[in-house]
Every structure is written in structure tokens, then in C-alpha cells.
Length: 156
Image (cartoon, rainbow, N blue to C red; front, side, top):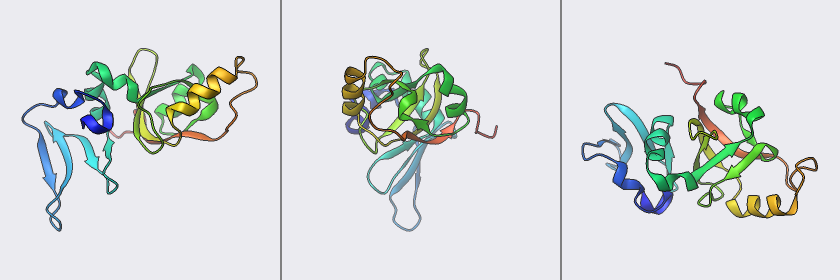
């Protein structure tokens, strides 16, 4: 956990973590707390967080470096589960890498969605410095975060 999301992130996890194992391989498939799924292990060694997992990790101070903040106009679309485009990114955490799992949060640090980043933090750092006015837009266009689950797309 600490390797993927930052130092001391795993300290937020309680001792009574529920683990689900694969019947075929015997490896851990997913983990949950009080029957709420927190995340699943991907075949590439990463962890795919759920909305509940992102909310839990957001309580730990260092997790903000794994988050992406969209502009106000994009919030309804992202929370419905639609992808976040590059031109709609307001802020990006320093721990965001290509292919890493990220939480999309609003300015008040409320989780809107979770997904996979397609661009690293260094891209946003360069593009925001190079482009003083937002009217021209970023140098690269397209999807920034491929949303896996939005808060409004969930069935409750």
C-alpha cells in the first residue's frame, strides 16, 4: 500500500481487514472493511480502489498526492462515471503516474470518482507552466483519467 500510494497510507487500515482469496491460485483477490469493498488487486501488481477505498485513504493526509481535481464544469460528468479530459484538470497530485489508480476529488476533497490516470504529474506541471492562459488549452488533448466508478453511477 505504502509503495503505491505513499508513505504511511497503510496505517489507516484497521486490523480486522477482510481478505478474499482466489479459489484457483490462493492469492488475495480483494480486501474489504465491514463488508464494504475497499480495493481489488490487479494482475499488474496495482490496486484498483473503490469509492469507499478512496474515501478511507483520503482521511490520511498524504493521500492527496494521488488525487486529481477537475474544474467545476466537469464535476457532473465525472461523478456520473465519464472520463476526465486533459483540458478539464485543475490540479494534479505529485504521486500521479501513467497507469496509476487515482481518486478524482473536488476542491473540498470529496471523492467524485476513481479511475486510472493516463498521464503523469510531470505532464501537468509542464503544461500549466507553459500555458499561462487557459484559453489556448493544453498541448496534449484527450483523456486524462479513465473513470472506473463515479459516485452517481453507483447503484445503492
